[in-house]
Image (cartoon, rainbow over all chains, first blue to last red; front, side, top):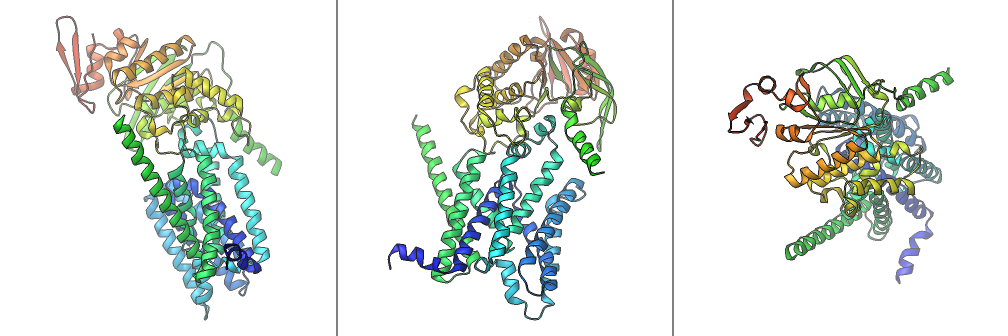
Length: 287
Length: 284
């Protein structure tokens, strides 16, 4: 079998084409939003938010009698509410922010599993919730993912300069009369939406990898935010495609396969940037 | 109802952007400004008027409220009591004030070039949803030229030395078209040549009627290079020409036990131990 056959054969299956499209779309969205997560040091927030949507999804799962489409809306609603609650708690500052996030994270996750465990044969669906089922994405779900991805990217592009200033220097944002609170919450909502969109593809347990790994790899390769976003999106798309092919040929679960490929990309970027740095230091020492 | 809501939202969001300037009003007016933090009083009944085009050194021991004072002027922090006006209007309405934070407050690992950071000063000059245009980059180029950093425009910000980082922020204030620059401890950790470059830029800015307020620890530098000095320790102990403010009594009141005087043949040396590196404050 030559390389072209290797690439084309899986595409004979409609589920594979839908899965690849979904993996690329969610990869791009998570990577672009993940750039903010990485530069603001919000990886733990992202991880917690992903886990916290489980109870919402679980309630939807009980009410919808096993249908998958409504789960997206349950997940989206929960993600947005939890992100706003965490945002408000961080401002109150009675306890440290990461402690507050930890409490909400664990509590919500436990609640989600508790609700799902009331259904007798819950393990298969729970596995999908935790680790994703990108190959099970339906045409309708794909359309929702596409529309939401488009809206999220549009908002990131439209408010690029506001988010840039807010992330780098909130004080400057305040002196320039940018409504900082509005944009801070908008940023949290965008992270929530990215998580909801990607829920079907990677599940809650590995979501943080989609948010931080491609963005962190891109961070090592560039010194500008817009380029970091483009590179992160490219790395995430490549991870999605390569990961799904690997999962097809060596029969590994799709979510972990995608995450492992992204991790490999990160390692490559890390080795490259380390070698480059060393070379520059050697040159500086010689000069 | 919806229309009204949108109207108020708009007003709240945008109206503060455009505060007009009263002609002949002082650049800054403060009357009995008080600020409390949970730890206690930080600014105590501060009152002064400042006319435009001056170079002002703000001195005082650590914790004297220098940063707080700057934040109140910039309109980032509302005072608990008292009146603040910038060009005759409340400070929240001005974008002509540039606040430059201490370098230790900045995330230098942020993925941005020097030009990117200077561009940030212009973002409310661009229309909504728009990315920087050619004209904006031209302004950025001019601002970088002014502070002599043109060659560094494409460098990542953590490749700059301390003095260059400070000048980059001055370029950002220029790109913002600021009429008042508040520089928070820009000389900390800088060697003399780097300090001199900043003072040169400050002198040129003064010719263009830009007012600069700089908080610092070096009393001699303040006395030699600035038109006005402001001696602060929670309350305003003195504001005016250096020789009127830096008197033994006022300095002792500001620094309390942390300042010692050594009589020399031609002048008096004031040595402070309040600051980190056993810094010496001198005055004549």
